[in-house]
Length: 124
Image (cartoon, rainbow, N blue to C red; front, side):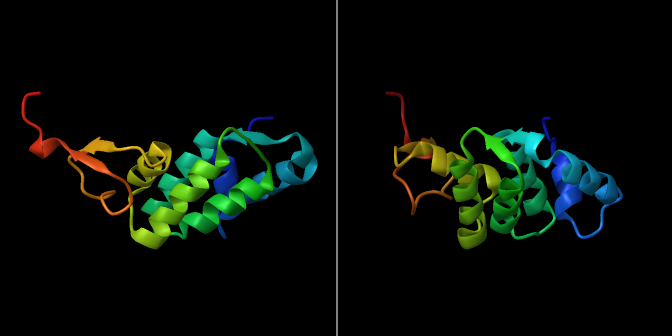
């Protein structure tokens, strides 16, 4: 069974109106549950918006069930959010760039990866 974001939020949050139902489903179907990295990305956004520890939220969620797809990218991005104040998508872009030059006018990643600043590019 594919677990969507609201299910994981109900399990993770201390108080959630769906918490009891989510716990019942988890207890009865734990071995059948899985999700995708897109759910983790959505959780990253929610945790960031709510001021939660994004790294803890993502690692806890990933430990609850099988996650199909690249979990390490989302966990690494959550670490950049926590440790360096990145926004979730800036962190995801940085991790996905894998050290390659990032073409952007945004200076956020400049200390972490080479950047081609769009503001300085003239007609090529």
